[in-house]
Length: 163
Length: 157
Image (tube, rainbow over all chains, first blue to last red; front, side, top):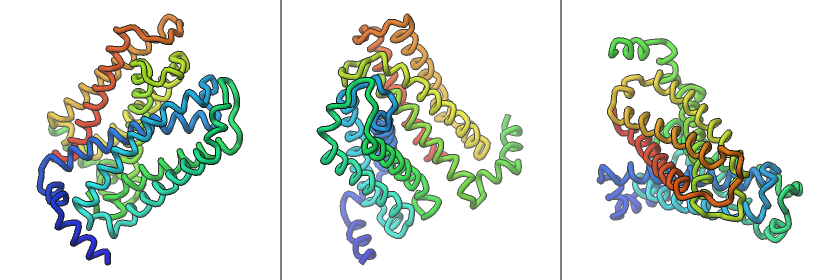
């Protein structure tokens, strides 16, 4: 099953381009790290406010940085998919890759659940106000899971065989 | 110079950092270096983008508190960067590493300049002047270049 996926992906034009071009892979790596910084900046600020730091910013205002975090995630999902298609055999049996995907999923489910159940409440947390426990939990889960996504991403060459 | 680098490379600590199968050697140092990058550049970009006029609902004055976060990221990366240097000192002789250091020096100077120009007089203005905006735009670009040169180092011997 996994072998068939690897064989198929490696036959695609995108995979050929990623593995043959001397520039495409490094450029995607640069973009992946730019996306990482945007994500840590945007999600980090949002998470800190949810956890009760930066109280002088109303939560409704700090919500505006979410779009930069979303931009970072989008850049990284696109470039990450290109890495996977480019060299699927590096990832498909790599435990670090599954760790990365698992905590990416945790982070995404956390934000989806938080936004749908607490989204409206965010608008009511004014400057100087503390946040409810549910906000603090969501902020901590977000920060922890994004750190683990970074950790397992960095471990790809060490726990598995990716470069 | 090359002798000095060779003796660093031959030291037991350098060998351990580079060759130990322990997850606490090279992998941990590299992970912390990546985290520091994200913290430094991420916090910097949030201030830069706000200064440039995005996310206006966030008071500019509050973001003065992002500067200690930037310095935490910077010192984490100065320390882990020094360890990566000890692990692989020959990389320090490459042109791209010189560029990376020079670009980081410019980036750090721009952080200091932004702090003093945007917050220096204790006046919490909610709109930045054209000059301060220019510093922020330059800072945004310089850290992109720093990331690019850092990544580039993975592809040189």
